[in-house]
Structures are given as C-alpha cells and as structure tokens.
Length: 617
Image (tube, rainbow, N blue to C red):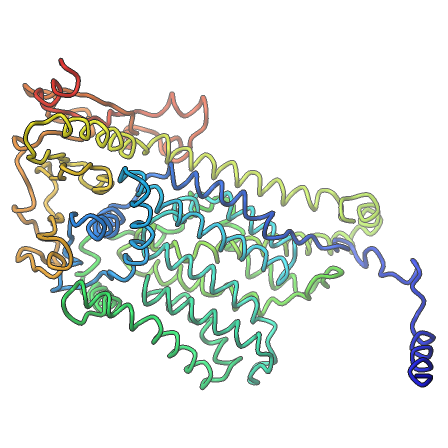
C-alpha cells in the first residue's frame, strides 16, 4: 500500500500545475476557432424533417417515369390494379419488384390505417422524406467531426435549403434510393477515413466495421436501386482495397452482395415468373445507346445540360463545387484550428471525387434527365461546404500575413476570434443561396402544382359520383396530351380507371395489368416493345371518357368546346412557352406573377356526371 501511495505522489509531483496560464491559448493564428462548434444530431434533425415533410406534401411529380414505372406498379402490388410499362414485361425485365416491395411493406401498413389512397401516397412520401432527413443530419454531424464544425454546419445549411434535395428526397425513384445509400455510405466512409497508412490493413476493428458498412450501402444502392452507382462509388472501392487489402474487400463485397442479391432475385423471380436480374438487363439495355438506340429514343441533350440544371438546383453552391479542388489544395498550406482535425486535402479529394466522376460520366451520355444526378447531390453539396470552409481559412491566413494588426483586432473582438467579415461573407452566401432555392421551390409549387391539386379533386368528386350510381361500371378518367403529368392511380378512387386518348403523342404508352399479381405481372403483352413504337391498343376514344383532365392552351381544340362537356375545376398552370425564362425559373412575390402567362389545368365532366354530382349544370 505504501508503495502505491509513493508512486501516486511521484506522478502528482511530475504533473504540471493546472492553472489558468497553463491552458491552451485562445487562438494561435488568425482565423482559427478555439472552440469548434459541433452541433448535436438532435439539433440538426428537426429543421430537416420540417422541410422534407413539406416537400412530401407539396412537391409535384416532375418525371413521368416516377409515376408510371414506380407509383403505378406500387399501386398494383397494393390494390391489384395499375398500369404496366414495357420495362416490367417479363420479356425485358428492366425494373425490379424488390425495390417496390420495400416500399409496399410500409404502404400496406399505411393503407390499413388510412382510407384514402391519396393519403397513402402522401404517407409513403413522408416516410421517404423522413428517412432522407435522418441520413442527411447524420452526414452533417459526421462532417463536423471529420472536417470542422464550420464545414458541417455549412453542409447542413446547403442540404436544408437545396431545391434539388427538396424534391429528390421525396421522389419514388431508384436514383433517389441510391442517393439515400450514398448518404449512409459516405457517413460510414468518414468513420473509416482515419485509417492506417496506405498498404497496411487497419488493425482497429471499428475502422473495418465502418468500411464494411460503406460497402454494404453501396451494394444496396447498386442491386436494389441504380446499378450505375458503381461509377460514383469507384473511389470508395479503391480506397477500401488499399485500406483493407484485396482479400478483405472482396470478402465483404461478396457478403453484402449475397445478403442483398438472394432476396432481390427471389422477389423478382416471383413476380416475373422466371429468373431475372433487372440491374443487369438495365445495364445491357443502356449499352445499346452507343448505336443510337436504347435510352436515346427518349431524347438527347447537349453536354452542358447538367450544368444548366445545377444552376437551378444548387445555384450558388455550383461555383463552390467547381472551385473545391483548388480551394482544398490551397487549404493544405494553412494550419488547422485548435481542436480541429488537420487539413487532409488528399482524403477530401478521394471522398469527393465520385461526384465529379458521376458528373463527367453522365454529361458524356446523350440521354440526360435531372433524376440521374440525384445520387450525387449530397457529394456536390459536401464539396461546396468544404470549399466554403477552406476559402474562409485561406482568407484568414492571408489576412494574418498581409494585415497582422487587423487580424489581431479581429481575434480580440470578432465572433469566435475571427474577423467579422470572414464570417459574414460565407453566411451571406449561404443566405443568398437559401433565398434562391426558396424561389425555385416556390416556382415548382406555384407554377407546376396544378396536376396534383386537380387530381386530388378528381378523387373526391369521382368518389361521390360512384357512391350515387346505380350500376357498378367503372368511370374512365382520361388524359390526352397531358398523359405524362398523370400522377398515378393513387389519385383515382376504386371504381375509376385511367385511360388515354390520342392528342399528338406517337410513342408507346403503358397498358393495364391484365390480372392481379402475380398472374398479371407474369403475363406478356404482345404489343410491348423496346423501340418506343406506337400501339393503338393503348388508346381509347374520347367518346368513352367520363372525365377528362387537360391543359387548355391557346389554339387547342379542347373537349370543352363540344356539346355535353362541362368544366368543374380549374387551376392555373404556367405556360412556359409564353413566359420569360427567368420568371418561370424562380418565384418572386409581387414580381413574377405579372410577367408570367398562365393556362388553365382543367377537369371536364360529361353532363350526366355533372348532374349526378351537383344536381344541375
């Protein structure tokens, strides 16, 4: 006992005295944060949840592929009725029922509680938005620890305000699911980033576990969502091989693949009636784009299409994204702030390189759609946040070198020991970006929200009509040139069926599933083809329609001009061809309304139906 006491006295005597003078200095150089701000997940999450729930309730469906290839077959799995596209034909098998089955489990639970199919639709969207919010908050919180509190808060602010994330997070699309997997995978990758030097497998079990989680989420995104995600994840795979060794990497990749591929193949085999690998079929189909077929049949765009698109969806974050490599390199010359990790531009470059690779890859493909960029949105915003943080650090270092007295005054009187303009400029840029994003979100809701509004009214009105009819024959709700804005059968009550009449489109439209699952999903429609060739059987005559939803543009021969048709609802919808480009891109209160031109998005009913609903016309 006396020996232990003597050892304790010797250690106490050797320890330096704990006085205020022995504490670390408040700041060692200009621009350093003495006490890094790292907000907790509980603080980051509620604002993200609020924004994502608003997106779930208000965001329009901007891509007909979402309605016909995902919402329609999801409706079919739930209710036994829906429209089938050629991609779901057993002959082609390009789409996975396993992806839909994940959402159908929650949707079936929601449908047992909610009576309206519109409510089930919104419940699925809310679940998607909440999942995205949680993963976004985790990535922002991890960035605070991995890079700096400043970079993490900037990333959170960009995720919160981004117009692109606003509608991507609630979309029922494999590319949106791949985006969720990227959020989870890159959070795990940051946990694994402080690995041992290249070439030596990490001895820390937690690091190996983090790499395993990142590999699993990438595999989930590829096999259940978007197989092209392997392009974006290539840098992660290379880094995992270097850190873990080839044998360990292959073992983890095969384990993740087996855990995901087996149930996925079983679900797809059940609905298709044969062994199908949709991810492989999709890759092979898009390979034919090199010969002018495949996806090119649905339109081509110039190489700068995505840059123009990112101007709308990322606005001021786009210049920061493009300048990020240079700013990260310059930041290497500046020492880290007290309590912050040292600058790691090499690690950051590896972490972000997948986003640039993705942008280059898809810019080189002729067929382009906005949804193809969804998986890379988190990486784009992460690059912008790191660039903004490094720009402030570099500016603070230059100030300390060129104007040391001003830098000293800033350390003494500025917030967190930083000259106020060095905080004010990034904050002003984030605020301006948020305002631009709010204008873009406002434009999407105000200018293009009419289809969801009128179809919601169709649901309630047609439900009332069906409940008062003596016979049980279905009501046909038709659309013509507006077929691609049809939001899905979730907006039609039981007893109503969707139909399309000819109005200028000459491509292949979807057809109803011939029977409930799995018989209907295994049936083969002889007219389905992968060449987008028209099929007359997919159309009906206007004379057989009970309700028509149409956009009334100047010069159109609308059904309202014919005897027996009456309008029961109208909503304003932007006439893009006759509106200025800047005012149709952004909504500015009291300014854009007077410059834009609007048409009527109308619901028309036959006279007998109107009398049944309202008693008179």
